[in-house]
Length: 117
Length: 113
Image 1 (cartoon, rainbow over the protein chains, first blue to last red):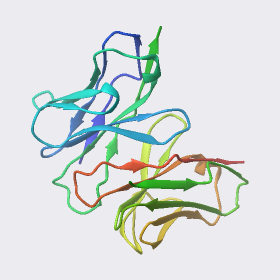
Image 2: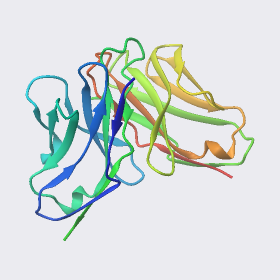
Image 3: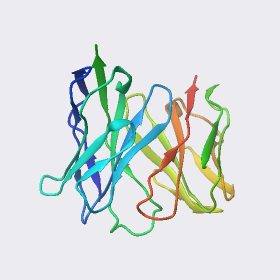
């Protein structure tokens, strides 16, 4: 089975400060990990993914994420937050050991990021 | 480039009425297709996925069904809506490769009254 947890319902940060949105996962093998962002009444937008290789993954809009196998974490980060980054962020995982089933992703419950002036 | 279209954007339907939501993908062939529902909170629940025409897998037993009559068309249906069917429905596609991310449409907000 595959699962992912986002322990924070909401994260507040001042504009210009660094931000971190936390994610931990559970899979049988080596995970495929993804981050998405959702603005109100819109679909989810893909930000970045980790498949293999370098533990620091860079994505869209200046976001990056760090894969940590020993802590089973994949935290989303940005060095300097913008007010326009305020949105709902989802972490997702796929266990490539699972056969069949298309490329089903299991999503976390989301973290609301609020960036204030 | 690939695009995904989902319609309608909003829909208000009475209990007991039928439902048909449509999703089409452009710019790619043989995609995997998915229907997710997002409840009022946040959680995303996978309802159906399809790896090919006429091939539908259901993830949860429910009042809904899905069909894939063409390679890039995915339809979500119900014969009789329930109040509990209200939610935000999201269609998504991915390439066949298992490391491919999902790409989502803009969703349909369904309110059953």
